[in-house]
Length: 307
Ligand code: AHR
Image 1 (cartoon, rainbow, N blue to C red):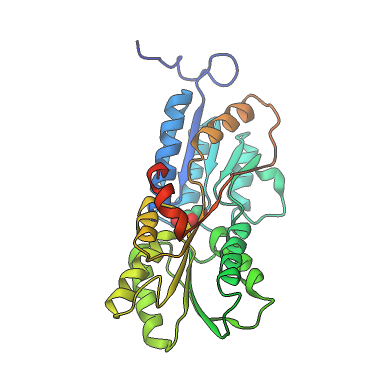
Image 2: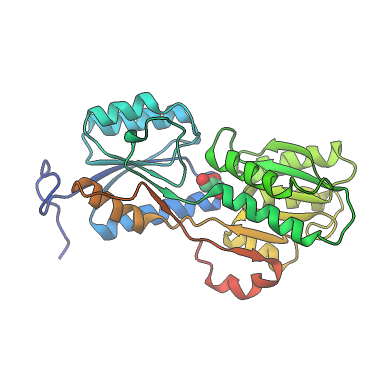
């Protein structure tokens, strides 16, 4: 029969159902949708009661959601911070209420690391570096300049800050690589397309697009095609995430390389939550494993992409 939860109020420890408040960023990308599904399914599987909130990419909504979770006396709060800064006050409130916090996917910028138990997610700097290293490899025998336009993720978010920094780091040593324009596309297809249209108008000679996620790359590809150019050929396209649609675009020759970012964090999150609620110690950083997929690996990998 159905597994029924014990009477409410039964908290941690033996047999008590754990309640988790999860404050999600939004539904801005294919990656995010997969991440939400992973968290929801994993909670069900783990027998954890999930209170889910969608902040629609606004920090104020996320802060409100966290305060509601505190009022509801959830056992653990997990969230993926929209932006990096500005969390100390609300995290202090959670701490004072005795509710442990787990960061998933994105980190916060705080000096007080006692405000959260652990951070589960990708190394975004490494992702940016991998993107840049692919580029320096691909253009090793080419003469410069190599004009790059960059579509940044949400302003102030960890993945935007870190993917920008990692990429810049990887291309810095060779002066032929020039980032000629860089602007946010907020991790969405619509904005990616819109900003790419502007880039195509303002920049005469674009060799490479570096998009901080697949959705922006896919939007930009439409803009490139509408301008009469061939994405992947006339303008090389580098992207991050690894959603199915991006693999399809790679098999069509429209994206040259995708750096993977793994959204399937649900199971690990539930495991960490159980430990944290039980008062067990957990590592302060749990990093997800991910790869790099150049175009010639796309067709073989496509069938096993699960997001
Ligand atoms: O924080 C992870 C990033 O957020 C993903 O790369 C992007 O697609 C999402 O919106």
